[in-house]
Image (tube, rainbow, N blue to C red; front, side):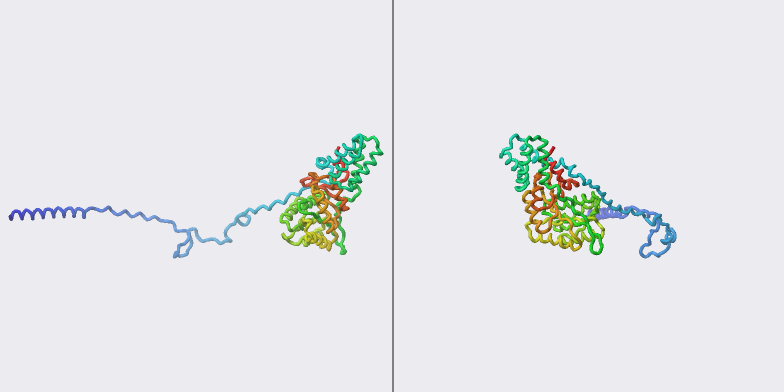
Length: 405
């Protein structure tokens, strides 16, 4: 028994010794050595002192003053100046002399049906009453008007009776003479642009008011008229008195810039009479030859607006006389154009007519009818969309276009 106890004690002691050896061996295990310290690297001193550093001279020596620094030639870094926008190149308008003759082919394309129809009828061997009625219907269909048509037919009947035998050339000469008489070759058709002298001896420009309803091409006509005058050697000032249409002043100014004419304009919706007055004053100060005033496109049914047009004329006349009032009519409107013409004539004294779109579906007889209605001549005609398609009206060239070759 004692031997058994001794054996157990020895076994226990052996196990403890073994455990201590294991523990001890773990404690004595070598840890990896600490990393070697990196050698100190000399770094350059920052160019600018850090917070807390003593101020002192930098590594490059003392700083230089602005006076000691050599600046580049020209006083510093050269900065490219933006290029000024190039001035618009002035256009040279086409000479007005003979312009209608040059545009005759364009006019004849839509107008010579009248002349051809009349010549065909007059060339019949026997001119009975039915033929004369056809001649009368042809003239009425060309918008010549009832009274002028009756006069023309009566004269034609008398001259044909005297002629007896009628050759095509004789008929053409006869018809040309009678149509020319109807158009009025002796009417004064030059646009009145001559200025005058004020009571103080100051030179005054010629003043031209351009009036008409919306859609007749009034503003465009004013711009084209400026080109006509510049082509004839006149200096022009434009007055954008159509203040109720936003694009009108811009449009007119563009026309003026193309030929070197100054445009006077006011605020949108401003007083048209005030703009017209300022334009004439500008024309006086610049010693311009002509002031063209584009008025608002009044609807002829608006009495108040028409009265305002009369006000524009009265205000301008405080500075000097208005030499010309041109009514712009769309030649394609026919009888409606005559209604417009009558209303305008009641408000301002119309002195001349501009017929636009005469190269389109217009009937040439409107020239005769509108002159009869107003007692004033057609002075200018528009024959297209081109800048130089506004021509002084020449009765001979117009009648030749009506009859054709």
